[in-house]
Image: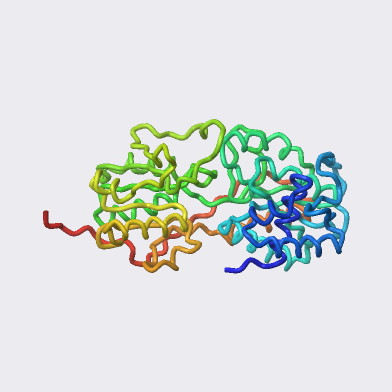
Length: 389
């Protein structure tokens, strides 16, 4: 699907605002578009005053090396009329883009102006974007930080707790007892989503199940920990394993996610050379007849590799994908757990609007809302049948 021009240009602005001066060639490589296209975008953004253009370099209008201080909250004072709601999501994240569109629908229907910020993949990219949005007069914040590892999450706790305007986290649940524990949040119940996947496979007679999952987001880490606990607690499950779904699905430098219980797990990953896991070999080695695959793109690629290895879905291996962004588009449409992505955005926007426009700015108790995923059955999982030796 071709990326809209407006979204691509917002991504350019986000990178430039986060890092300062950035070469056009670097932008083209990171955004995976041609240098000619990026140069044209930079020229247009410079023309309307959104950034400055140099010889092969894009620069922010304000020097990103000079941090903008977070404004202090003014108790009892309503936000200025016409102030925008800042909406911050990671770049190249189709899952959260659906959440973004859900929030956008609610905010636009309410007449609230939206300032969209796309955070690049560099560590700590969200903070300068939020600071700039607040300096521009944003009256509220909806944010889904990337949080690739526990350390990056912890580093955001302090400043995000002191933003000074009503804030709602989308599809993120901070660590209990942290500085953000008492921040409004709306997210999917990924434990329940994982339960749906395992329960569906168990109901079809599968007793040996593999989870091939990412490990580079709070959602991924929740799914991995939930699968370990659910598989351990289900007496029907005789054997289970957890592997990385992609060699690039790792959290990056930083400590492991605290509190993840992997007691009794059979953990594997890509080889030391970074090669992708050989899922077909693992299935044969463990005698597994089913797999849960997170996320969708990794799932479709793994199903393709299984077919190349002579393992066909669902005849030889039943599969349930997790995310349901593109799971239905494979040559074998995949049964998938579908988190309520757009509904998360809508609920988060409604909560923020309540904080902004409710009675006395609606200073009621903090809300930590969870919405339940659903299971979309498409035929990539079937009952276990006896096999000839």
